[in-house]
Length: 492
Image 1 (tube, helix red, strand yellow):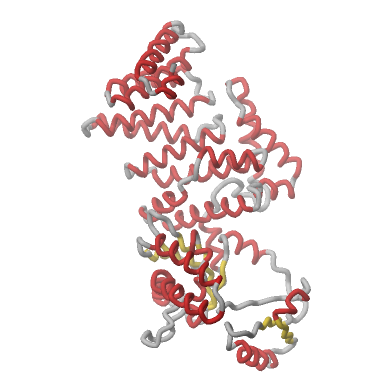
Image 2: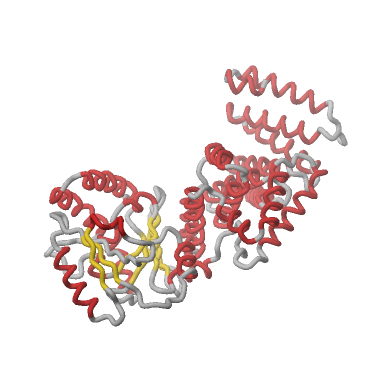
């Protein structure tokens, strides 16, 4: 009848369902193995009635039934986390509608304690843990609870675990469709609002890593493990599948084995952070050769975070309207790229100016304050629509603005999709055994009128470099480049 109510919306069906659930509970006296499940069903039904009528008595009844249900479940039972989460959310709902008092504060404290325990339950499935952690994070964020940042950290960790443990790409896509998007932006916002900028960097990196792993087929962490120890990876995958299917406490030995394998993986060289957020101390190594500027864009808030080799990250707040501005710039940039010649350049110039005013100029001011010298190399880690825009070329490009008035005049800009990618790229560099060659690709046409002059300057500079051999090729000859060539490109 509860299902029927969901389809018809008739309160008569819901009342009839509650009646049947009460009768079923009467058939399950204390000591009956099905009593906990029956209590849970009845609690869900009376909570649904509260949502329809707003009668507080429904909440109180649901709270009473779930409180008994959770005491009947063994702590190790997989359903303990789900019932605990339901009880916690009902307690928080009660706190929202009753006058503030010592009792309501105690209920709030009890609710978040239940959520914390449920999100860290050793015997629940990864998906149940993720859903509980998200509920915890949203409830804590809404109430500005001190556990907010911790809750978001748990939700991101469980989200990544769910993706990695799914047996196929199809099942991963189904999981994403069913659960929606993990609140990465809210997680970042919460960390920034709490002044925990290092944690904010960890959150953003974890979210970006999930995105790029998704583009590569989601399986990256497990594939890396399989390359090191295939037997261990296969055992881990098999145990994770069994854990997802746990329904009764007699199978709890699988969970114990799963946790043991997880600890074993993290003892392997390079796997200390397996299925965990990479700690800030590790991520900070990305700034070993120059500052890394992470630009986070979301509808909640937008910021640039400057990462240096030493010291805390530095926050640069950006305009609240930035998401809307970048959406418009992306459309303009697409149209400009489809245009030809001078018309394209004319359309791109306002885009570069807007990027300078809204992002590059505030970041530039902070870099100067931090003592970063002009012509230094910097790395950009953009997000959202900014990934498709030429941030490296941002500038005022106006005679009315004092020089330098553009990023190309100030710094040598590079990009990285994630901090981990930059760290891995540097760690994989082989020692140089021969002098490098210099490859210049010139494409002189009407859109790049200064290419010939730049080519001549590079020719003069390259002759002064000992051991350098210069090669100049035209755009039509690009297909002849061999893998052994080294290409350094500068976009203007």
